[in-house]
Image 1 (tube, helix red, strand yellow):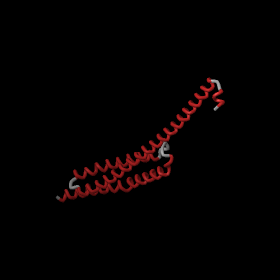
Image 2 (cartoon, helix red, strand yellow):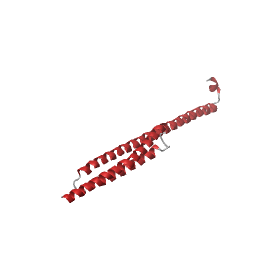
Image 3 (cartoon, rainbow, N blue to C red):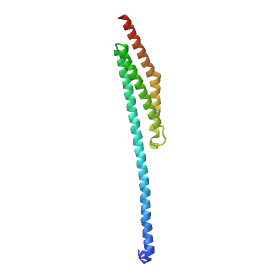
Image 4 (cartoon, rainbow, N blue to C red):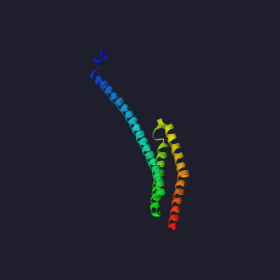
Length: 159
């Protein structure tokens, strides 16, 4: 401390100014690092929420199709049978749209580097679900639809 007091005032001010500027720079860099981490966390949470919403919408579309089977079975006219037919197409579109959303988010390398295993699991599960829907469920819905219209045609001819 004595050496500092013995320095000329110009050097003391220069030294003090340099220390203050250095502290400001250290604080600025640490603030940028914290801001970057916060932004990354916000992106992770936002994308996770978007995946969650899309999964919920896919489940809703499947429940909607389940309801449409009941509507087909309860239909007593071809006009009534057109309602579940139209709604099945809406549910199918919603299911496919949300599966694409989940797939694109889960395969993105721009977020969630800490969750690569989970993202891979989600992506694989979505592919399996889409395959099941398109290979098994959609053809079954088509069979229910055809059988409903065939049943209604037979009932109409019988009356």
